[in-house]
Length: 65
Image (cartoon, rainbow, N blue to C red; front, side, top):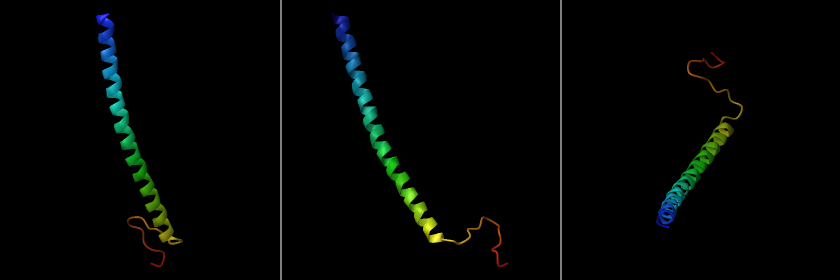
């Protein structure tokens, strides 16, 4: 009987620890999801502002040179 009580106590502690991990991951996932959403909105806004303009890389000359 004592062995079963020890196992139950161990399993209860494990379940509590896993529950805490899942709660932290849920919070982190919500934060990361929001950050990705913000980045996507920022990129969409940047693309809308650029419009039909040519975006040049590092050392490219503009077409009128």
